[in-house]
Amino acid sequence: QQQVKQSPQSLIVQKGGISIINCAYENTAFDYFPWYQQFPGKGPALLIAIRPDVSEKKEGRFTISFNKSAKQFSLHIMDSQPGDSATYFCAVRPVSQNFVFGPGTRLSVLP
Amino acid sequence: DAGVTQSPTHLIKTRGQQVTLRCSPKSGHDTVSWYQQALGQGPQFIFQYYEEEERQRGNFPDRFSGHQFPNYSSELNVNALLLGDSALYLCASSQGANEQFFGPGTRLTVL
Image 1 (cartoon, chains in turn blue, cyan):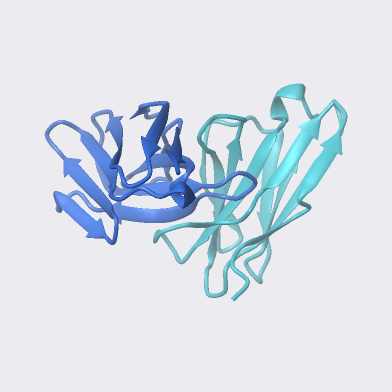
Image 2: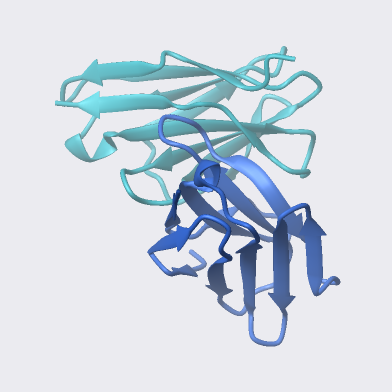
């Protein structure tokens, strides 16, 4: 099974700060790179996603940066808020296959 | 739109028993995927159903089986339960290979 590495394992950020979570994947063809947000007791919810022909995508306070040559992509949360405190998962989708998720990053935003 | 619904919310079983979990997909979705999420880990893909057939399968033993009904709802069955089967079981629905929407999950505890 494809390995997806995610860092850091946990992150503490002050309110208003920038949260950065990184994801790295192995050498396989993928066609979709989403980030999911999960609150305790809930299922993961799609936050933002990017396709490999784009290097950056921004939606509100959330930005994905994609580096195809380095096989890495990252999630940036600008102006982090206490309500952003959750676990974040990156995922990759091999072509014609199902998602492979990273181990998750627990984000805590301090008020 | 109720989104993806799962039942039951929680379930406690003993080793060796069998369990059936249920999922109703989001309106308009025809594909259902099942994931196992152990505590503190990312979701692991179990299998996917489309047109009432298992289309893809992850690295899970035959004790894990499923079914999809004509109304696109789905069941996950696990036989001969082991302690290690204790996890949050997530159902995700999609329209074909498009983005997946997750349900809240069923928390299974095996004693």
